[in-house]
Amino acid sequence: MEILKPAVAGTLESSDCMVTVEPGSGQVELDLDSSVIRQFGPQIKKVIAETLERLEVKNVNIKVVDKGALDCTIKARVEAAVFRSNDIKQNIPWGGAIR
Amino acid sequence: MNPAENPNKKRLRRSMMFLNAQKPGLIKDPYVYGPDSIMLDLEDAVAMKEKDAARFSLYHALQEIDYRGVERVVRINGLDSDMWEEDILCSVAGGCDSIRIPKTETADDVLKVAAVVEEAERRFGREEGSVLIMAALESAKGVMNALQICEASPRLFGIALSGGDYTKDLQTTITGTGVELMGARQHMIIAARAAGVQCFDTVWTNLDDMEGFRNDVQTIKNMGFDGKSIINPRQIPIVHDIYTPKEKEIIFAEKVVREIDEKSAQGIGVFTVDGKMIDIAFYDGAKRTLMLAKAAGKYKGDL
Image (cartoon, rainbow over all chains, first blue to last red; front, side):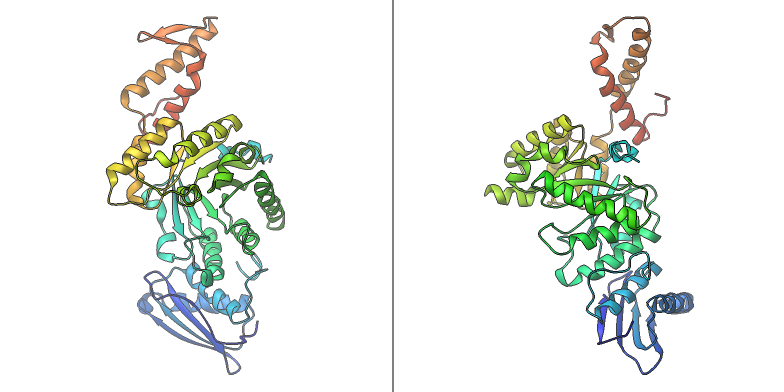
């Protein structure tokens, strides 16, 4: 998917994360801010990268502010932000690209 | 599987706890409080502009979080919205156990949902008949149509009263006395039993009045309800306590079941247990007492 416009999903509440996506400059550029970055930084980055890969997003500036979110929440917020940047709210590929 | 034979239709549902599907902090570990069911809400708890995000959050929670046997019901958006079909697709794909229909008014509402659920089961490779439905009645019309709603689909395991909207429709308010809910409660439990499905009561929203809550739960238990919708984990132990048979009741129920089994084998229909007249009519009630006692860890026998 292309990132057509800036979009945000999630909150800064505990156990959540806030994901912002913007059109990139030819690649995936990640800015991660996490309260648990020492312990979980590599795992969070991996989840973000895999989620973007499934959505075929190759050109994005993505900022993630993590407040101790589980993997399932990180995935959900990245997906919500990417689909919002395309204004897509229905006919989501459940069980396909979303899994 | 024929949904009528789905073993989950009759499962124990004393406490059904609402949780906002959009809040990761709420949905990550609610099983620690020990509710029988959780109701992950896509409807009123989720702001209109967060409906899309709530679905992604719900899907992955259903896929990845081990809820340790707690039933996972999803409350979808109303059939008057353009969101309920996507809600069902997301929920069934994610692996939910049941769908709760809000503002149900007719048998047709249940059939519409059942059709989409069936299509979703096929599309996402879920076993046919594995996803059940419950219907919330939130209006005078819905309550009056309780029997047709209960009988609408073999997937339907029960109906629940939603007191806030219902009392608005009656042009009154929740008073705390229960007087405004009396007719609906009585009508719904009779309809549910006539159709052989379960019946659940509305939420109690005043968390400062736990004694009022206890009285409310005792009332609906006495009326025959299977359980109560709840909004806070603090309400769970009270509901479970009221739905747990007392020691004396458990011992008596065990005797009743044993005696009926024994006496009917001997061709005797009516007899006394501890001075009380007993016949086959007491059998199911005694079995239910033992089932509730087992669920509460109070009965470890083999009946």
